[in-house]
Image 1 (cartoon, helix red, strand yellow):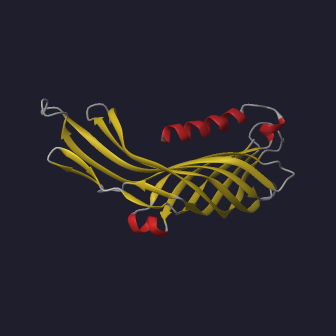
Image 2: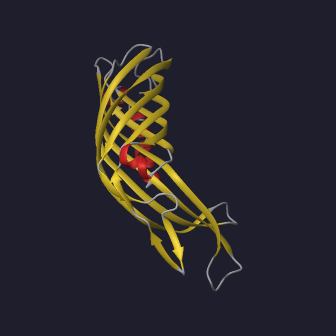
Image 3: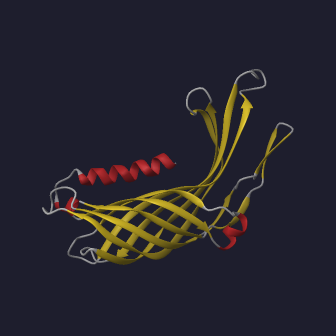
Length: 235
């Protein structure tokens, strides 16, 4: 899921950058480091922040005060690793088993902001989905952690919406408008995202007893506060 979200966003970003048309000249894309802080009932169950990345692409005409776009994000809020024999019949081959708790976001975004100037504060609203999933992978110890097999232990989707604000600071501006990369901006933002009810696991929710797997499934709203720092590119 992480690879799919990131690949789609980067494909859109570089695809628009490669086009010389009017749309490309009004495109604003970004790549950010993402921190997610659980809030409300979600915080009562999950006491760890999530860390990951987000990518976005939007339509932001220079002469306007708005941006409309989409954003995909991925963060991990817990990981467990252990070493196990490959099977009961092949106990002399050891593998790494990694279980990760993941939180993916996909939102449509509407932003009010000046699209010119060296300092650009903005307000924004968003709506979309939160996707929570726990995945266990078997990794080959002799080939740089190459995945051998994987399985989703639990996943669920919840509707989400929210708002926030941020600040863009111009780092670079091209002297020739429409010549490809027109601007590079530092982007700092914070959001509060109200997430609907979902079922999920956290670190320690999977128990192995007498050769059987048992899950301690949690259920709550999935509210989070996100902090993002990265770069935005105007083409």
